[in-house]
View 1 (cartoon, one colour):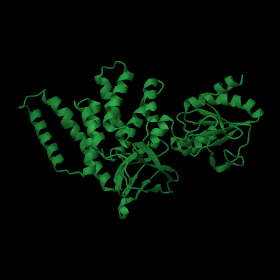
View 2 (cartoon, helix red, strand yellow):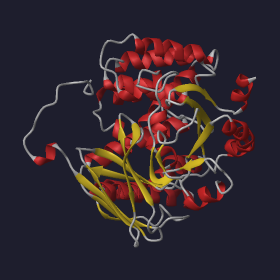
View 3 (tube, rainbow, N blue to C red):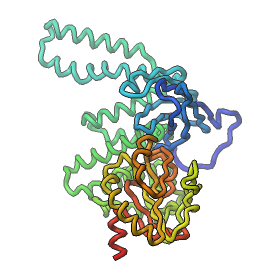
View 4 (cartoon, rainbow, N blue to C red):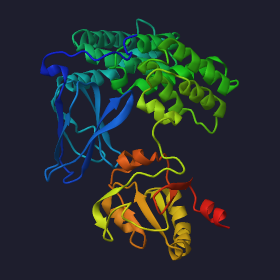
Length: 432
């Protein structure tokens, strides 16, 4: 398998380091955040948080060799996926309902080629799914049957005369495999997926389809088991794919990380314990993503000091979390768009009265993206309030290992973690 840890090979020439630019224009999006992301070990990684200018233009450098999908996200949740073959990408569009429809690719042959392939997809669907069904309902001599045969030949002619680069053909093959999994039309689905996981290079991780194919494999395996004893079926399917991909390689660890991400630990505790124990017993190098998933990464533990949070602008004269002095501090991760947070806030307000009187302080970190909504939400919050307007892409979220909102962390005067909870009532009960 190609995707193993090996010593780096130095190659002369600038292309070995691969640097290119992602740039674009959102015509109706001036002076606002744009998040440029790439896939690192199959997981989206924030490469740069930048802002558009008054005309909606932005630019970001990708500082390494990269062939695959670059995703451009707006904090509102809108995003565009663009294919690159380690070359510059430039586009133009508008935000809102026609975000993807109005996309114009100015520079980037790989993405232009992919757009052509996507335009052919409706014809492929008609040819593969509609014609076979309709032809059963007509005689070969019927006028409509003859017309379908003629259209089928026309589609084949278009396909035969449209040539794609190897990269686009590769991405199309992965998309086709995903589609077959969704339609349950590939009797050798698991075998074909395994071939990709065993033979493909890191373009598979960078395709944006890695997780879909892992899920398709596991789902197909469980379906064949008849839906009985789901947890045991999960274990058997996971063992099978790890046996083929090798957990001591990057590829195998990326597969396991992906599976652990979509299998709920609270519903399948035995499954998670088995593979967490397996990872903890490894002596090989482990990816940072897998370390984080099984708790090996340098996370925040009870009794350890939490990271400092530096504010973009001073809040009540304080420049950081550490600058705020109190007997205890309650760090509240929340968001104005979070319904559970809205339910919890009134109870936090009530708790704050007594907490403040005893020398405590609340520092609320919002995972908001809209400045106006944030400011409207905090207008009657008398504690410290901060947001970097990056929602889940905030580096603070990663530093603190936050996976849901609301999350509440109680720290002492030295910023050492005392307790983590999701409801203020958990602190109230402990105080009684």
